[in-house]
Length: 119
Image (spheres, rainbow, N blue to C red):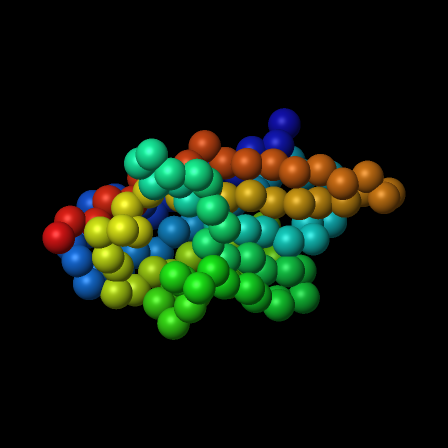
């Protein structure tokens, strides 16, 4: 059974920091990339940051300079370090992975972790 389990969310004040973690288990094949997405109240889900198996990263404009994505490939874990948080960062943050096995790609999502930034 494939599971992506996020942790590290919570309530933080404006300007504060949080570190999210996502552990993937049960995935068959190679994980090509892992992403963090978020969905704020009344908003569409959006990409926050992505990291490939080779360590190449990509960030949404709002995340550049404040958020850092990293991964521990040996542990199938991805992290999101968030600094200088703002109220508009309030959202449910979701972990996503894309893996492949003999050419067959699969996508998995975690259940999400709530991040709330107070002003």
